[in-house]
Amino acid sequence: MTTVARRETLTSIGDRWSEVKHGHKRWYCRYRCFCGTEFTSNTNDVKAGKVRSCGCGRARRKHGRAGTVEHRAWLKMISRCHRKTDRSYQNYGGRGIVVCDEWRHDFAAFLSHVGLKPGSEYSIDRIDNDKGYEPGNVRWATRTVQNRNRRITVRDSSGRPIADVAEQAGVVHPRLAVERLRHGATTEGAVLTPKRFEDYQVVTNYEVVASSTGTHLLLALACGCMAKRQHKKSRPIPRVAKCKNHPMRTTNA
Image 1: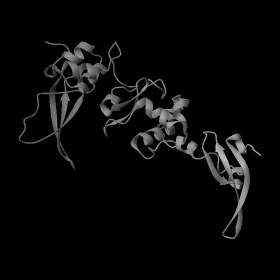
Image 2: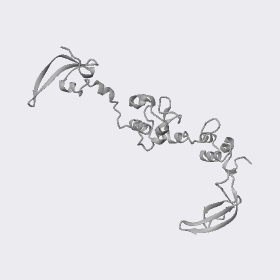
Image 3: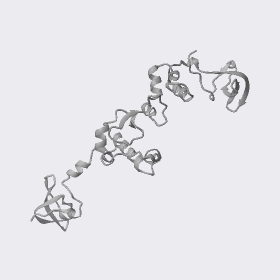
Image 4: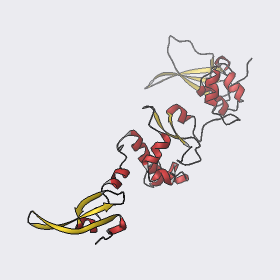
């Protein structure tokens, strides 16, 4: 008689038989898996749910890449979005960033979309920081690219990172262009003004101060601010100095 086993995954074929092993009688039967494969198994294991297939189900679930850099990145991605005890949860799951259902429950689907990690300097990055981890919004990116794609990234009027614009122009260092824009300069002025046109303040007075870390100069600037510089006898007293509290001049003279 043919019967359907637990969870309807296996179909028994014919009658069962017993065998004595190690002094105990064990019952066996032939089963047909839902994939079509026939095999022999212990009837008690089938009834208890320990055996549910010929092994094909386990083979499908195992992707063979456990412990790889891609698999660890996938686990960390899920943790920071869905595990409240994760130290990064407040910046991801805490503000609504989630992993799509397709990727959260299937590493193979995630890997098929993003591919293998190109190199050690790459990590997972979201193209749009206001969206979650989903197809079309995730890529492998270097640390430089990720630093220019943050919520606090300084951008020009078109939304392009000012550091990218400065790097393409090749006139000043991207970090200097970002600092200029934060001080109120225009995009053109921040990117195209050579460094020699930086706005320095005239030193009106100075005082030599000795401390446990060495000898320093306290410079009184024309704007009323103070600047501190390391002092060496072999170096002359500076005539001008930068002031961090006042905007830099960013127009060509």
